Length: 324
Image (cartoon, rainbow, N blue to C red; front, side):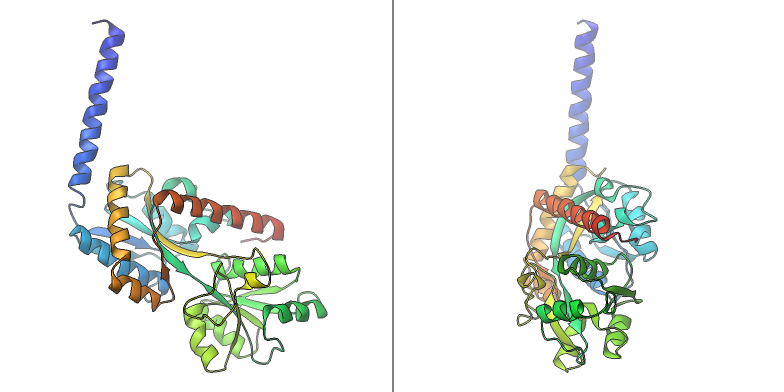
């Protein structure tokens, strides 16, 4: 056997051995409790999704899933921990638009979130609601745009729950597409944002649907639009903003991702378990009660969704000249 043939034979042996090891590791996965990292405090929507969906995935795979909340640095801290985790599948991440928005931060992550993570499974979508104070003389998006254009630029203020949050950028996208000059006001969370609107500090607030609905029903707020491509099942009487501004859409997605160094066979096993979890009534119904509409999706389509979301935010930040 010549040297070239020997090299080829050796390469084949190594490849077969590696393939066998990966298959075996997938067969034995998971071999211990798993860790699901989130970037937000306990009690919020992300934490609830992680505990409900993650818990069911663990049940299906026969291992406990421990939710590890690591808030801080706008979600960058938790992403960094998850990206640098051991690529054996036992640590995964509760992904949402911070992955696609953070590359536009002034203090951006020391890595490219779109490259360091591999999609595991979409879980579903939430929505943001555009609400106004009952004293604001508008009943719909069209009237709000007319009001804004009749007043000095910047005189209408919209509240959001933090610079770079989805509801912040939802408001900025509305301003760009409507041609209005709005003044953005950051609050520390949805509760503070909502209170500011009810007290008249701001005229508009972008709020999670679930948080806004009780106040809307009580007459303390007026809901005039939701940010999704279709109406929210939790608020079916509220039109989408896109019904007035064609093309307007802000998908608030939630899903599991994992360090891209993880073997595909393990990622596929996690994907299959998550899809099974989403079909169970206890997961689907519990998440719906939190304003999340679950949706089954292939890994390839989830990856496409993430790429398109990232492109949307990069364009908005550039077009609007926003500093995050």
